[in-house]
Length: 595
Image (tube, rainbow, N blue to C red):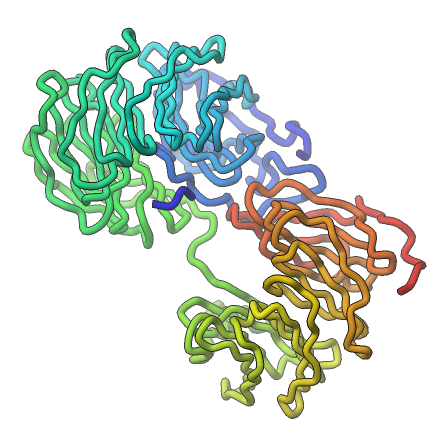
């Protein structure tokens, strides 16, 4: 499995009693405004769900659902599904979350550290440092005094919650440890590992008690029954095993899923076991009868994590389809879907009049959609493999599409009838980006063959090949006057080219990783570039100097686009979000200098 500030004032949080415990009460603020990075005015999307155990967790009173994501920890009201808070400040993807029993502390597994948060204030309390690889799972002891963390460094660490200090390091696994669970009495700890074993540890003696063997593939999740007498383990061998804790032996192997099982969880009443799998289903099992009682379907991709509410009435599941679903356990049906992004579309483009949207996909198809009617109007069987880029001509009458590995061509299409006009051949590797000149007479294409090519739209002939990049050309964009072309590259640079002279003008350096997207401002005075270094950079086109670096995304930024009035910039990232930036804050330097 693959290892997946506007000020705090925007996070107006107060707390009141909730079933004798703590409940989050938040002013009704649009979630797009929660905990924004400095300079951003909105966040569209909620990030990708973490891939640790557990990635979703209910608070002890059942009122709050915490979801680990690529941009932080989202807190939801479990009953209304409203967003309560977004906890940010992590240095990377949050993989796993766990509430302390008194509901006062929330732990999040983050890169190589564990972050502790005050649930009542939403403030970060401590950062626990010691692991030398990604932290995959966290679990509190019943008294809330000890936190256990599992890591890719093959260890389990025990921490004092009050002091934030490391208590012990448990060593013995021979591969990454992916899940950890403390027994209900706090005396024992179970850990599951990529070494295909489950290990039991004495918490007080800090030593291994037993190694449970039987799985034939990696163990990704372990969970104690509420009475502590049974342990469940989930594995990539597509089975769930039940173990007797006292006898240290297997009790049963439950009927197989049809793909890897990544998460298991007992209901608080001990009567039901839930398992989530890469087959896209959640299965409910009768613990006493050791047989399946229900299969919950609705996710469109892998299930990463499952978690019961404290009253055993509700189950939450997190999936690779980038949604969290809430299920009624008794009725065996979906209650709600908490959505961010769903599905993978490689490229989208609006027609100039905004009436039509084109989408290119890895299914090798381009679809045209009516924006007003919200329905598909045409399907273009575009390329032999994935469609990597789409762009409308300025008059909206033509669409250009770029092809993938086994079809390194650019195709021109008539929007009115969906017919292919021309195939432009010349690139020797996948086409990564296409862009029409403002007058519609020229098309630029960038490719993995390190070149930018200019084409005549009228006859489909190549005009020029622009060479100079030392890595994949990821993005091309014409300036509004058509005199200049910008190209971004895997070589960490942005190049500016004179269209008329067919030669390089300047190389802009500053990114420390792939440059994925470039875009000119509507007046042509500013250029934005998006990088895998998680930043967006603004450049003065006249001088070539950097104006500002916009930080806030937690994973690589893949796309940038200016609003038509040049007052706002949108950036899209692998963290599953779109950030909107207020450009009025960045006046930049004088742009009087010309090349």
